[in-house]
Image 1: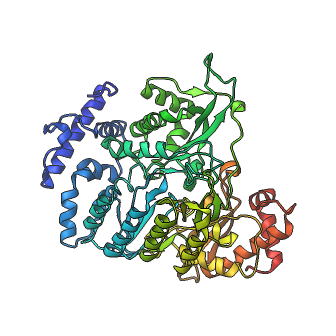
Image 2: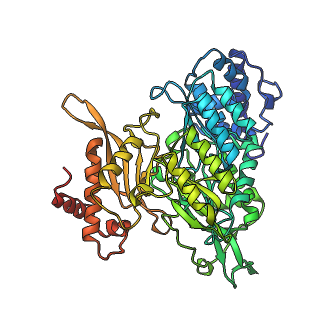
Length: 598
């Protein structure tokens, strides 16, 4: 029994474990392995930290949410055989098993689609061309024949029947890929710089650190079953933003100059990671600088300690307050970081921010088009995807292009597109021509380059609007009417989960049910926000207009972009600077004057 537990908490824990044993017996399951088969034994296996945190919650008078009870009654990794039995009979899961199967990367998405969606794990968003082609084959054989690139530089496969779900998971394993822990209360796909190792701008190649953290998670069961999901990103300060400030942990590559001291000792100059914590844009927060710097080789240990403090102290009674942000809000950064240091057994390095050199500036269009690599004579080619969607045949052709004309890597980005890297100068035209032949391009409008959309109501039960379709409608409406000369990000998300991160868009649209009569009938639509940003422009977008019908959104977006072009203070004033320079009422008045949006 942990020395951190009081006698009362120990009694609660014993009773809690006894109740779990009874629940397992009632389900025809054996005793919990970590409890040694004894009805009142304390946990001693890899789930010990989680059971103790649950017991502490109960001892303090809290009531566990259903998901905590489901995790405790049967760990999802212990239930794979039962999952296969369900699949064999063509049975889709009830809520508790729908939650459990998400540990295996499967989401039952009814009523939007009577099928599973599978989300993979691809560290740093990079996979080999042969793996990419293999995923295409799997999507065609066991799913709907297409995939989506997500805002975590990942892939989703949809329209998977119950019978095909195990075959899909095991097919991914045959490719050296996995979906383990990509859903539910786990550490999600590990993101890193899309151009890691090939970018002339970058300070640090994030691939080894993202990969090390990925394998650390996969091989430690105690890192599954957190109070809620957890995001970690490594940004090497390259050309393409990783959006690490939207993560629970953001590691930001920085260069420290000469003269830095910590507790009287010199800090070695060079490349470090700055530690930022608490990003969760759906809850109106970006990760905040802690003042701590981490040696890249130490990032995994520091991340592990942070997660374990969260495991022990995250809220298990309220899903809306179960993210790291709320521990930080309740404790403050100093208390939280002291707990992390206690877990690590050592102090973390803090330095004066004035000794950190300015980071390179992102190129907001570097994820599209042809760009010279660090390696002379080689290029990466950013492929424009229609809001992240790829057919299986397009995937196979891209894989063939990468193998014939590139270095064999497919690099997914958080901007819902991909890069083909290692393309010699002499083969760039071949790549562009072959992309064109399958309906894709290395070129797109500035507007489409910044268009981000979640799955939407077509495939997600939470969404109030068809975001991908509406995003394309916005582009189709605006492109012939207005020409942009600066990057603008337009993010459409279907619900409060904010998978498309609408709060950091120059324009953000979140799905809403729009009333159309006094009887309470509704149609799909959006609430629209303006002036969000990330990185040096970090900040939450402000509400601009509520309850906009989906079919009215394109004209409203056009009107907002037009008033920016007409009324900006200088030709190079960005949209976010323009929006933040005005009060919302003033922006609304300018739009009303255009007469282009009702």
